[in-house]
Length: 249
Image (cartoon, rainbow, N blue to C red; front, top):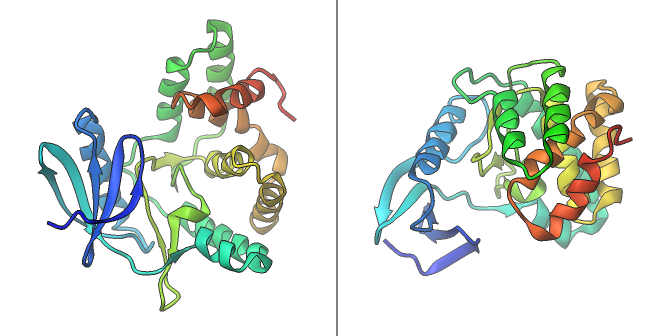
């Protein structure tokens, strides 16, 4: 197994290319249960109408767990926007269309988004009153069963040379309310200091789906609280400001 060609490196995982295979290698202390759950969730999403890299193997390499899947040749939307910034709105439109198609899918064995959000809120460092308020807010939101990627952004979309769009990184996938997924994508833009692009994304998504912007915005506090569990110090202050405003907008 060749681990010489590295694609990306994170604090808890590294991603390599080995010919036509992609190897996601996790740190030794990474939860085995989370790794196996990620592989299982991606295998379940493979059964939908979406283009998703197929899981080939789950194994260990030098004592570390690894998920091996198909390597998808192509460029991410992030790379394409970097090369052709004048086409950013066109690529955002493509991303929106793919997200809408994702939300049209059903995958009944996936974890429910509401349950995951409820658990994550309970793990935050916010005071008990804020947690109760957030969980009450969450409990009152409409319950759906749409496939929600959980980290739907331009770096997780690969366009092949044949112009086929693949969606990657399904580690956060759940089933639930699509507007929570949209709020998460919008928050990614805000956290990346791309507010203008985020505003265009949100307005166009709402226009294309005839969804009230206000309806999506109601999820922002919940998603921000959930995101805060990751403990990214650079983001915590900003996320806390969102969470601590009872009516964010």
